[in-house]
Amino acid sequence: MTAPEPDLRHHGDAEVRADGLGLVDLAVNVRTGTPPAWLRERLAATLADLAAYPDQATARAAVAARHARPVDEVLLTAGAAEAFVLLARVSTARHIAVVHPQFTEPEAALRDAGHRVHRVLLSPEDGFRLGTVPEEADLVVLGNPTNPTSVLHPAAAVSALARPGRTLVVDEAFMDTVPGERESLAAVRDLPGRVVVLRSLTKTWGLAGLRIGYVLGPAPLIAELAAAQPLWPVSTPALAAAEACSTPAALAEAEQAAAELARWRRYLVQGLTAFRSVRLYGEPAASFVLIRLPEAAAVRTRLREHGFAVRRGDTFPGLGEEWLRIAVRDEETTDRFLKALAAVLGPDAPEPTPGP
Picture: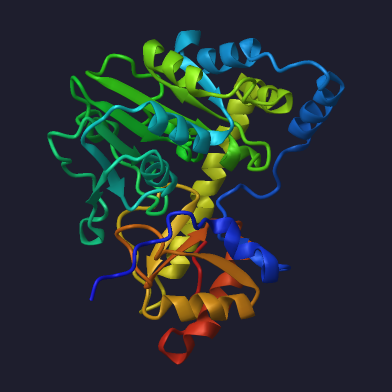
């Protein structure tokens, strides 16, 4: 029997809508307590400028400086999701490979634009380690660190996929959740072919509702993507956010948040490993953890009864109903979640004792 096609349009926010009122949100990977007060004030200050059309020049220059790139290699977008749509619209690729499991919007956008997509499925037994893709692929898309696996691929392994005549698209939406942004290709400009890096300000800064992201890549391709955008695609408040979040002070705050997140993630992982029925694959490096356990769909429903929303995994190609994604939160929230999970799993999974 053929497995049903995953719902590529399902996202974590669906887990906490409607009847999700009052649930602790472990389904969406946005940092809690954001936007910070200073950023909210900066955004509020733009309200006086809304009568004027948005001007990207200052924000674009700030992002370019942040990544040590020329301005003409930066495109600001209404979130990283818009960038996937633009790439799909302008692509003339004949052999497209999307590395899964990963964020599903790139494949959805490509299919909506009429492209055929070949899925390259990574193996959990191999820790979702990046392998080979078809040599004939002239467009390759992957995430780093990858949603939902939380695996951070070495920059060398990602760079090895670059080829003359190939466009390599690397979704780095969660790279700023990694201390030091190690393994990023955002400032790399000397690889063969066309290497495109996508970034988002949603996760660390809590700006999902504002819609701001950007593309880094070769100037000719950036110009082509810009030509496919509608006029004034990024609002004045979103441009202010891009500029503000590119300053040295903001980058230092993001680095501190990434270090704190790493501690919280270790705490969550240690608690999860105490459950006999829970399996983790690879080494999680981002703001979420992917787990595998029997009857995960029923577990997810029961967790809602205990006040917690987690992300189903079966909508990601390469996974199935036995997978759940859990957002990393502070230790107190994690303790409450682990207690709820122990209650749901019952006597076969004694209540864990989290480490320090």
